[in-house]
Length: 244
Image (cartoon, rainbow, N blue to C red; front, side, top):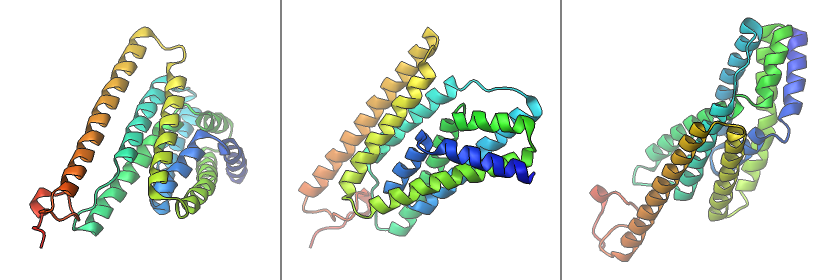
C-alpha cells in the first residue's frame, strides 16, 4: 500500500503540473476564498479518483470522456458569465457571503469533477489502480493532485491581493472561457453530427441567457444610481430606503 501511495502521488503530482486543472485552481483562487476553492478541489478529486480506482482495479474498464468534456466546457462557460455578472451585496452581507461560498464550493466541485473525467490524470490513476493496491492509489493520487493544485491556489490568492477587482473579474472570466473552449474542443473532436448540433444549441442558449442577465443587471444598476430616492447599498426593492 505504501509503495502504491508513493508511486501514485509522484505520478499524479507531476502529471498535474501545468495541466488545465491547475490553471483552473489558480483562476478560482484569484476571485474566491482560497479555503473554499481548496475544499472543492479536495472533494472533487476524492470522488473522481475513487471512480478511477473502481474502474481500474475492480472493473478493468475505460470511460469515454467526450460527453463529460462537453458538459464540463459548458459549465466553464456558465461560470465565465457568472464571473462577468459579479455578485451583489445586500444588507445581510454575512449571510450573502455564506450563500456565495456555498455556490462557489458547488461550482468548484462540479467543474473539477467534470474536467477530470477522461483527463490524463484520471487515466493515469486507472492504470495505476489496475496493478497496485487500490487504497494506496486512491490516497496517493488524491493527495498528489490536491498538492499540485494547492500551489496554483497560493499563486492565485497572492495575485488576487494585488490586482484591481475589475481586472481580476475580467481575467478570471477570460480564463474560464479558455477552459470552456479547451474542454469543448476535446469533447467535439471526432464527435457525431447530432452531438455537435446539441452542443452548439446549448452553447448558443447559454450565451444568450447569460448576455441577457448581465445586461439586465447593468440596467438595474444604472437605474439605481440615477434614482436619488433609493439607498445605493442594496438592489433589493423590499429594502430600499428613502434618501434623506
